[in-house]
Length: 419
Image (cartoon, rainbow, N blue to C red; front, side, top):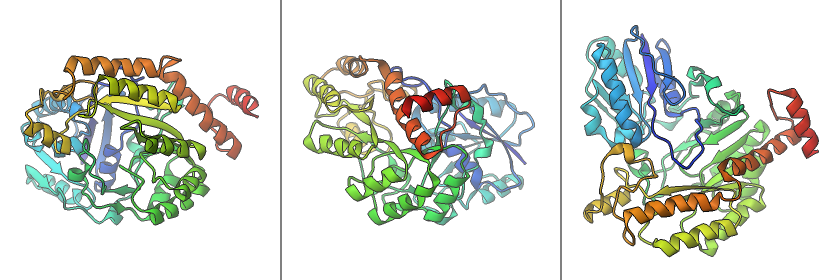
């Protein structure tokens, strides 16, 4: 049996340099399929979709709400040729009713231990309209090594630099952050994978640089310490979402190769300033994730926040506009207050205003968003600051003997520069 697995394109942040990481959802899904299923993967963000007329089924993996408009177009193309379409992924779980209008089948939930039955149903002519496993989580021990061999790896680089490979060490999140949907998607209970399986997967990834995509690495200190200790011999360099703010954890994370973290910055408090300083004191870079347009923000507060980020020497900043995604606590609040102004999913890219801000007009918030990017990067731009972070990680790699570069001459020049 042959499946053409498609990851639809979506509009990127206007202010951010465009780059493409190898997607995680499709390779995790592929690992859950029976071994006799032939998978042809197409990532529309880096290549042009060519429909394989010999495919028995099309599977469309959708992570983001803003991918949905293109995903529906892609589904229509397959169905016109008589190829049935099954949908799965995070955005599918958030928009299940609408997705069903464009699909022959919809898979809701985590795939491990379930895809064999789906494929068997299809082979027997009994594919169900919906496979509903929401909040019915499989044994976390069933999560195996993702099938990264389906990726066309040469397509995932930026100016000759190989993009990070994505991997996850846990699922679920006990934190119920106001803009986040994970409580609905992955549950409120922290579900760590067995550490030996995580390490085996990391070892199998040829890339030396990883992105640990867990929603948070701040749940369980004992588990974190065991994970990081096991990672040290791998000499991988990695990025993650927030780390537990604990000196023991931060030291071991740095020893295990932590390169930089994405840290939410939601105010100008001493708590945030201290947390970022502690990360940097351990040699860990920080890319702030800054949501603009909360009910605490007026024009002065946003300007003060940008000044604060520059004052504390944040390495990078990713500014976004508060976006009320389905199943998030903030959307429920805005629905009650009748403040959602658009359900055009193509605008849910986190750089459009799709709700009525409390303390300003939508136009003012959009202008402040643009000004935040321009002000923070006024001294060289996004690429310059990203380059500085890459310089730091390459220096670490050279010192521990893991640095890889296609051009030997440039490697020698860089080695001389940092010696």
